Image (cartoon, rainbow, N blue to C red; front, side):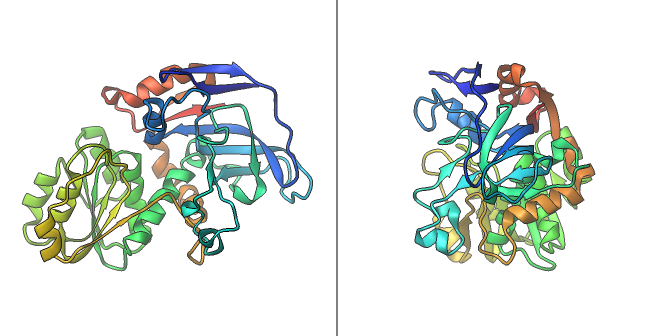
Length: 337
């Protein structure tokens, strides 16, 4: 079988590997679609050291191809994959927060990821999907789950005014997550026209080209909750503090580099709560990932346009180049099979 693997220095190539056989509790998936995440780009550029040997891809949809002993799911079942393989024996695992397990392994980093033709996955990490769900939306289940948790960490409730900073795939999907959680009004910053169009189509009530435009428009009617989805080296935490009302909450989904600045006096005077949101967990009555698959299924027609570019596995190098080059107007780039 073929698999995409990072090379020393950040290149990526397609290698031939032996097709794996499932062991007890495992299934083998035939991959139908896998997305390229911003974290994959960070890894490519050395965020975890030399990426050589890492097989990326954690936004995975596939079809059960073979099963090991003790597995109840049947071949032919369409599924999405939750990529956190936790130890299941620590405090965080016992409290259903495997995302915080110190010994967890992540599919697409420590374990072979979905940029391949076949992959082995524990049955416990599979979420059934309708057979007629298109592959683009199916592989958006994972980022949708990230947004579900972001809204939950922020405690979005009925009637809340929610402002989202950033209109990449996470920012755009957060519109749906916030609305599902009960938000009465969703505002979003979207720099480019194609992002603005998608934001409105997904249900944003108002779209602004920048945080400054948003602040100018809302005046002293600040947001109850801000969801930050940009990260990097920017000043979006400063923007979030300025946009949030006194006593409000900020949920951070963006991955920051270095030590991002927070305006300490405003943060203190407004008595804000800032919470980071790391992937997803199962500590609620229903898991974040399950809810993510449900939203991806229910709103498939709305979210499919977020997948702006698709490539074959043999074109993976080109796919990464397009994902990195925003002049291509890329939102989500996927490998399709």
